[in-house]
Length: 107
Image 1 (cartoon, helix red, strand yellow):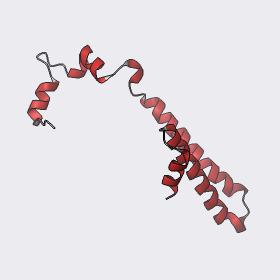
Image 2 (tube, one colour):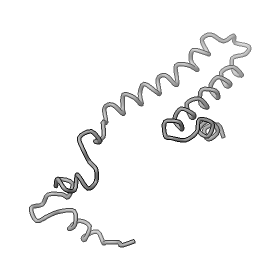
Image 3 (cartoon, helix red, strand yellow):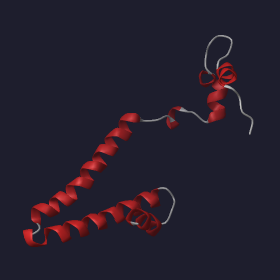
Image 4 (cartoon, helix red, strand yellow):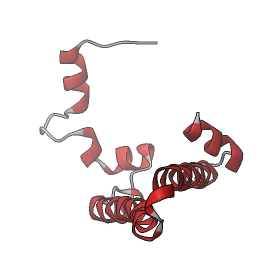
């Protein structure tokens, strides 16, 4: 693989007017950077917050409902099932098999 030193990389990234390569239309086309493919930071943050809240709410619900005598095994079991389920959903979303994601999360 061809490597450049840091100065050459900087020179290649800037044109004579000081604009970066990304600012040029042909570079945006070449790299596939479009308005629809740009990062959506707020959407990602809200989705992450919602998934964390939902992931925490279900085990907390178990602690509120379960009898004190069986709380630890029930909480542990429900948490493992939820981990497996979420791992499977994540794997399926990424194109892998459901069981592959569940096993990867559990072990």
